[in-house]
Amino acid sequence: MMRIDPARLARGLARQAMASVQTSARPAVTRRLHGLAAEMETLLMPRASVRVVSARMEGRDCLRLADGPELRGSFVNRFKGARKAAVVFATLGPAFAEHTSACFARGAAVEAALYDQIGTKAVWRLGQRLLAGLRLEARKDGLRAGGALFPGDPGLPLSAQSVLAEIGRPADAGIEVVAGGLLSPLKSLSMVVALGDDLKRWSRLSSCRECRYFERCRKPAETRQVCR
Image (cartoon, rainbow, N blue to C red; front, side):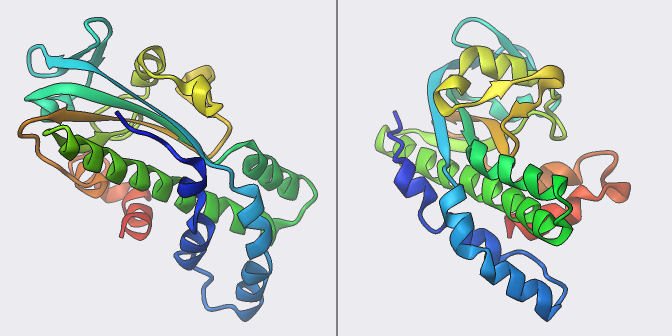
């Protein structure tokens, strides 16, 4: 359904991510950030895989994918009316994560922290680009793409990662699901998006607000900065 152009995914990604990084108005940090711009552009090598499969709800909290594995979670009911589901894996590539780790290892704390912040924001924006592309392609097929669910977020347990890996094609994006359902390389993501005739959309922040830990979790503030 969706054709992925790696060059298009990468275009301006580092610049957009850098623009949203908070440097606390410290001139030295700001100068360091701008000094790293060219290198970050070369290190960001995003890749992604998208597989669209049949999907149907079974009960309230179970989505059957490709007539096989079940995706279960308290927010899966949002996929009511789904006819298909897009399973997405995306990453910034290994070079970015390796360079960030090397900075930490040699004690370049400021540089390492900047790379880590930019990576977090860049991988989020990469996911948003893919979601926008899915919505465009769905419209061409006369369908509507709903909101996205991410394993580990409220309403979809991290254990769902193994289900998505079974249905999707993480290896096509250079991604491996490792112990605990985490993704390698770092700064990678997976998500599932329902496709149908009349599906509702929602923001990731709205999912956070429904979490019982919302008031004492650091994530909502970070999400507001990343998702704006």
